Length: 498
Image (cartoon, rainbow, N blue to C red; front, side, top):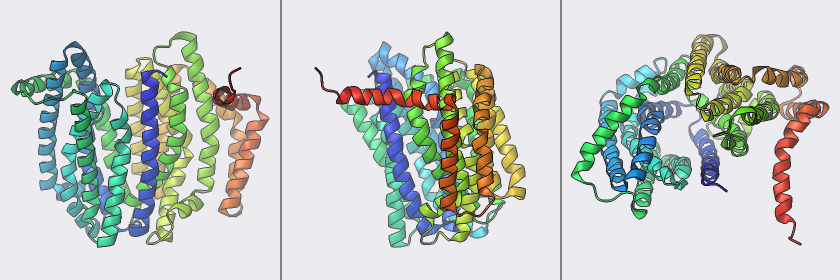
């Protein structure tokens, strides 16, 4: 197995483990706090902490630091160590300054994010944000360290990051429940990131990539940061737009029914868990094979990827739409998570599920474009998709309530899928594949009309889609093309050598 595939597999397994713990934590959190003011306040405080950190330590850092550090560490290891120290020092200083600003103006920030929420929610959010904001420097420092380790093909730290965060949140939630002090929610989150920074630092020192800081590290680091920011200035629009859409989703949700802000996160946990189960294996099977491939072979693999996403995700989306209420009740309905919370989360989940296939397809096709070096196309269609999401959520929340908030990401996925498929010349193929699944869509609508009960409806919809796929040879071959290599490998491993 190549180092790239091995790294991708490690990252994928870590993400899945993190999702499992995150789901467990959400179940515990929902039982204790439901969609109360505490739940909403904590979500708001998280947004206010994560958004500024992501602006600096997310796409911008990966575009500016990672490539430059890779070149510098290969050219001169000592210069690479100086660059790592410089970035760490300056980024930590900058984000500490940001954290101080968030702390001092937390009342203004909370009112901007959730202008329509109750006074009780804003007070709780401000209180939690006063502690949670100090995690912002840890985001940036850990991101620099994880990228540096990744350059040296050490992916374990990046892989376990979501797992460590989820464990910290779970521990903080359990402690807050047992003691009755809600700030343990913040302290568990911060403790997780302190532990993660310590683990990354240990890995860097143990492997000789981080030594004692030199005076020249500060000046060199500042020079590298200035050069990096200049190089990526044209790309700043995309991460700013993405983080703005996250904030605006909170803003629009605050004008909906009470508890909608918290309900969105519960629904996203379910949809994103399903997406991870599909998108991660898809990445292992298809996306890792696209880099460096051109011509007919590239088009053929992209076409197979499109077929697989459409055939697998449309039935999954239908099952989630029909069984949203039963699924939400099964996962969350206990303790303080009452029927009102179930209805809110179910409404958001229906909106998310309607376009779940397009969310996975848009993600996959955008990665295919990126593998081909067509970043401008990805930027253009992503910005159009973000604008569509904002419009649907902003206009729809007053008319359709929770479902409109869920429909926003679905519209985002639809617009991104159409744009990327058009850029790749796969739009007609995707449309034809969707057309072969229309019988299943129509049958799903028919099943929803009578009140069959959630579990009977789920079983009937699954049967309908199985029949739909069985009736079309092209759909059967799409699934078989993906399953056959896996079965062949297993059989070859189990067959003893002659």
